[in-house]
Image (cartoon, rainbow, N blue to C red; front, side):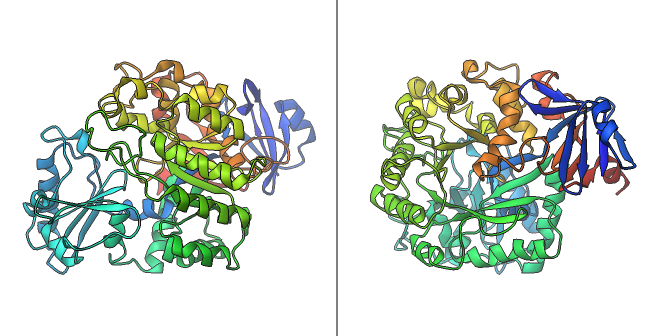
Length: 539
């Protein structure tokens, strides 16, 4: 039994307590310091000295294993020009003495941030870094891949190579690959990349859990188990749980790019919510389109800065509807990636057909919900579909959104406050490794409607900002709701799990542009301290 006193403990909107008692892994009392002290029968007392305490933060959509692997790669997210990208690859190849039998694989370039040429790198650009070493560079959104000529040869991609499931090998006028692959075409390469061993993956996961605990994450909905890797990926997490090495609770989003794997999974021994409070099977995850930055998000009308394209649907309406129905019929929750308005409309059509007018008791949801339009918002609100949103995407998208889709559509995008007023549930997520999984970056963008490092710039649709209470709830209670655990976590109330964090600043009163600087001084999961700033300093 442990007593935490003299704090500012967040209960719910505009409601705080001074103290709480935890016993084993549960909160058993919340109230004033005197109220808690009067019933306290233990010896361990923590004086919070006025610090703010929040429920443990929940990221409702990221790729945790991918993030763990990404953190070990050559960093290129900060590259600001094509020239710098080429030079960084060249230097890495030389310093690591890579050969034609090696593969330089990394992720994170963003051509919209390039200061010299705002275009995607092609084979000829990357050939300048090496004509011999295969180079594979993935865009920050993970929906586009650039290869040099050596990589095209290494992975046997030619002008005759076909893509089975919604993607494209971009070709030049003579029909030869330019080195740019989009959407599911990237799987032609990923399926043949060297695989890390189970031991290497587990070590990376353990290290990344420590990093996640440091920024206040105690639960994540992770989207790693995909197609042919589902069984191996789920076993990784199961083994870590059996070895009592988890310091994060995992809700597994099971990812299907290739529908041929879906039936086998649905008819296997796996069931929705199978597992424990530490690790359980969650929703079936599908994709329907791409991203704004790569112009692959599916739009109803052409892109304003490229009228030749409306983006792409990664599968037909008929296919998505069939797959969603199959998942729902087997009792699974479903989440579908949808960024463009045409993509979102396709998802809603599939959901409506699968539910057949019945209530959304499986809590089907849309991931991203970016380029919307009020008609789509009304449909989401009417059926009670969940949304998983990433306010931090404004950091990258603000400089390009008006050029990409024009003023009218830009004014009906990222409408977080409008959706909130309609009663639409929104949980916050990072989609890491697309961006950092630091929750305070997301929260700051949500309340400022601005970029992280350019707060003097004009806010993007400032009326769509949410207040700090809504932002915190979106990272706690709403994340728990999305996994059907809102009665077990996401609040600091009696009977709830003792997952909570202690902050160095008061997030409810500090200047909005300072939210990104907030540090977690201690993180508790299941009643145990899994991170404290003092212990980290000692290490």
